[in-house]
Length: 249
Image (tube, rainbow, N blue to C red):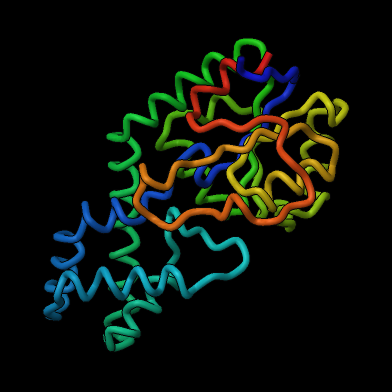
């Protein structure tokens, strides 16, 4: 029997919870458009070389509030530098690539069957729950994803680490949520995929936690180490987003 949890409020992580990492899908989808942008600047480019450079930069470049799902110009500029693109060209080309990438983000989200699963589940939960979302991301990145998914209207609380200047698993992140909703931590469930940043952080603040344990075989990319040593255990574990409707009462 599925373990059920009582809650007045549900707060969600964004990345790999509301949305799976779209990076590889977008590169595959938009590669022809990316190559065309290089050609516009009279630079021939091997598509595989471009994808490999971009992937390496996405792994290498990381800074506070960096938005890997929606991509950032510094990541793209790092890739262009590794491809030895002259700076007077990369300063324009980088912005053009970022623009095309985010068009691809919208297309991937809108065509993903899982987007409808998330919408449908949030619709059920919002009938008798207050909902929120917090992401270690930039404000523009989270807003972009929520709008593309068509789910912004479900949340009364939408915050990012950039907007409050604190990242998970800092307990102050979860206190910020509690201050907004004005209820005891035992009445709040946090849903996230990271055993340390989500589970340990939220449990330290007294919230209940549901771990979204993603099956890496479905996405064919490296994933979290769910066997990593953590201070706390989640109150429940799900493998499908729609399972939330059965767990939360």
